[in-house]
Amino acid sequence: MLKPQKALHLYLDEDKANPKHAGETYVVMEKFDGWYMYIDCINGKWQDITSRNLNVISSMSEYTKLLKKYLPVPKKDARLIFEGIVYDQRRYPIEFKTVNGWFNRKAPIHEQVTLKCHDLVIFGEESTPFCLRYSNLKAMFRAFKKGSEWLQCLDLVKWLDCSSTPQEWYDIYEEVTTQYLNNGEGVILKRVNAPYSYGKKNADVLKIKCEKAFELLVTAIEEGEGKYKGTLGKLVVKDANGIINKVSGMSDKQRDLWFETPSLIVGSIVEVACMKVLSNKSLREGRFKAVRFDKDEVDAL
Image 1 (cartoon, one colour):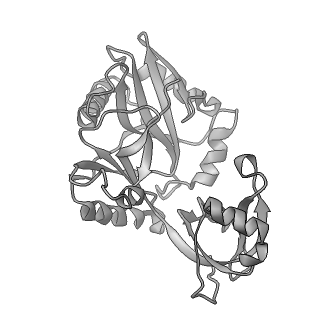
Image 2: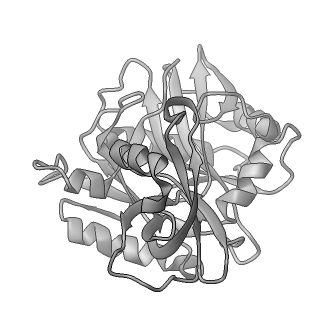
Image 3: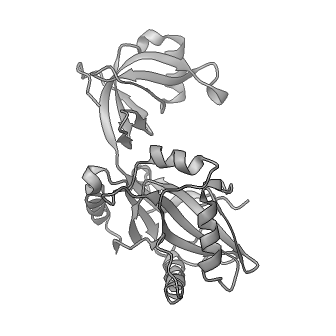
């Protein structure tokens, strides 16, 4: 099974002694808060829409029918890559925790889904640079638009910038994240000359995601599962209003130490980072950053 290419956080590459992105030119595109999806064309026939794990998405069955009917058939086997999002009446993307439930159900989704297309990979030609793959994608869209009918659900993700200057990437990131009442997701950076690497996470594809940090009180610990069985799994943290969340991200040394002696961490104030605070005050991708020995006040989410 050909696993999808993955994106690496830019800050992780920046932390390296020799960052791989240094001096490289990247295309900057908006990152949307939705489901990554794929549809393969095999032997001249489009298949079903699948998820990141390449499982058929039952809720997208009606969209599969539309794509099979109207998408131009490439000359070679290929994969069209897109992200499924749903807009509200203001044309703001509905947050992930809501659409996640809609896409995950068995019944066909009734909401209007927009498929934000950003890559077209020809099987056997994965070494083709991204800039050329994107040109092929635009050509597909042109051919599609020439037809008698145009699927309004399909949208081509636009290039916001193409440069080798990280400050420009961060400037665009700031512009994107201030959209939708400051709820923009972030940006994706694709190296213009990069191949498509199945299952790889490297500097060919980077992401800058909205991240927030809070000082929260540790109220308890929980034992982990799987490889963390018998050691610390998560810290239970509370904000100034009593909102409870559970976070991970500790080192193995911290896990063992605090699991053996919980009093070393319970009652401490810790810095917790997250991509965003959801409407129910839960933290999306919340993770432990550090113990804040210099803090004695707890933030409100």
